Image (cartoon, rainbow, N blue to C red; front, side):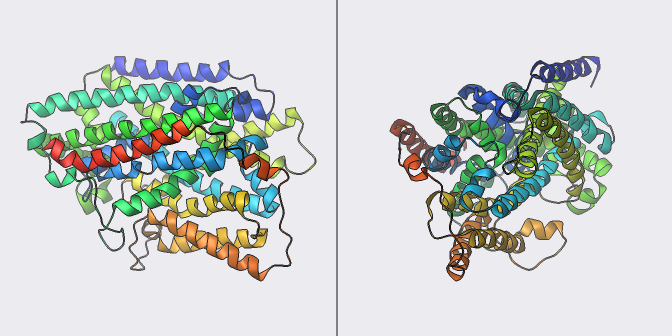
Length: 548
């Protein structure tokens, strides 16, 4: 990087610090955590995508497609379930949650079950989200360390401190509008990498010369059970459905955006936009991985640079695998892009990190304040509420920074780590809300047992968790199934324990049935998403023929 690149990065940092100051006038919880419930579908939809399609996707998804052993275009199957999950959230999740007027979605669970259920879900969210965000911060630290040649510790602090400051100042409005801008910048960076990668690949004979045809296969009919069986069609659709339904509808990070909308119509619009736009964006990510991965194959000096960077910054990884696949994009940026564009790509990477981290610390803070400090009949004053909220933002920022150091030695691509961690928890969380909406037989003891035991059993079956803890139980189940097993286990356990504790009173939410019977969602939106699901599955089936 030269003076031009650094100037672009510095301007970007100053701009976002200024944006936090611009949105600093927050008076209460609805202002600070829900943006005054005045947000439109466009910034909210971009913010929703920016949080999910962030640094992890920008760096690790192309690495999975282009370099990872056993990788390839099969990553697209992870998008199949998105349209179906959006339909489920429109119909089942949003009406009762939005009309309840809550800030922390786990407050709704307390109304149906008990304070203990609320606290269990809140703690589960806080632990899983802080750990997963640590992976995101770690990913950015890899990039900045490799590009700027700055020590790993300092690269983490640079990105985290900037994000914490503007999140602390501006609250949800700063987070959402920041995410919207960052998503645009991130997409611009994606197009730049794809353009230069494609042009360079033509000098070596084109795409057909630079990749293994096996990487073009998208749909695989394996069941995701047994060593080497991953990304099968059934587990990706079924497990992916539960993952996305839980993540977008029952995870505070995303649900908080839905609750910030002006109306239910606005929510349906942003869910429709997310359901339709995610696949094209991820498709471009995958094409970029295919192109740059092909360039690695054809340009020996490119592969050598990745190996040298791995050896310099990750000697253990170099000794095991020779290269760290997640370094493919940062090395490409350093090696092949002109100055000025390097600065823009660094801004894109910073954008990716900041969108994820800012969303997380804001949501973690909202849950902490609402579920631990503002519970019960005695509510906090507006002044005290804002003081605790801003202190919570700083606290969770520090926790996320600390958790980043836990994942540095993993041999898996970070995009797989983060999804594997979430999959342990998503099923039981989703079941808790669905049973709160519809079940009249499950009490809070049964629900609490269902959450805790399902999570513990999922932890045992999680290959990634076994890897992080350096144990091997000989159990090889693809992590996407954990979303399904979590649902089944938590439902069965919740009903069984409730049947054994019939003496415990089952709480009811007044006027709830009236709320969910008002099926005022748009049939048109549901129809569009179903057609889109069928279309992307058919398109994915023919991708090998299209690219050959």
